[in-house]
Amino acid sequence: MGTMAEPNLELLLLGTGTCVPSVERNSSGYAVRYGATILLLDIGNGIQKRLLEAKVDYRYVDGIFISHFHPDHTTDLIPFLFATRHTPGFSRIDPLILAGARGLRDFVDNMSEIYGHWVKQPGFPLEVRELDSDKVEVGPLKIRSVPVNHSENALAFRVTAPNGKSLTYSGDTGFCDSIVRLAKDTDLLLIECSFPTAMRINGHLTPPEVAKIARDCNCKRVVLTHLYPVFGDENPADEVSRYFDGEVILGEDLMRLQI
Image 1 (spheres, rainbow, N blue to C red):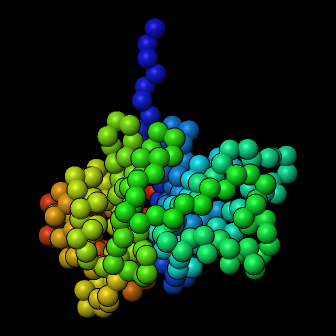
Image 2 (cartoon, rainbow, N blue to C red):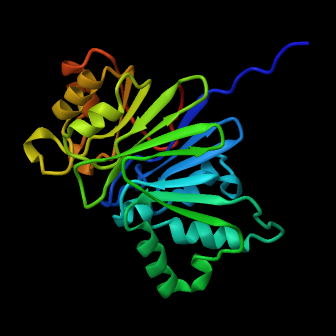
């Protein structure tokens, strides 16, 4: 008898945009799948709809990892919990891990004050975990987090499968050593590339800075995300490729990548 093939680590780009509305790009959110295990990295506004479009069943998401508390990374969390609680004919039994930076419990408490106690007690086990430089396991996946240079307590995440394949998600960040260390030799670096060099602001990255991080961490592939509309027709992947020899992909909503 043959053995079952090991699943691939898969990344689904659900939202590659920002807080600025865009027809083409949803606010931030990404699904990671390994066999039956599903993680969400951030859950900005519109991510629930994108999950449906990507044919990912929201009812069976195992964990949600929030990089920071800005609205374009968190807005669909309450609708997600509400939908999971009230889907006709469905009662969730399995725990949902909700992980994020220090302050996550206060965030959930505050949402409970606004929307009702069900946020903290949605009818299924909700495991809230505050992270800093930590390691978490969800099913067979191992997730590491480190603080990065953005808002208070902002985090980046590295997800590693049993076969050693990994992806690293920068969240929102400016250039910092912690993202380079976290992403060392990663197979895929999903990294924000918010602004052209001429519009650089602290706490975000430009294409040359992305390229430096990619070179320094020796990643195999780079996927650019969190793209503000100010790029217009300019393709930031072209500029990153001038400084980094590896594969550079301009992220698009509903793009699906095998790792």
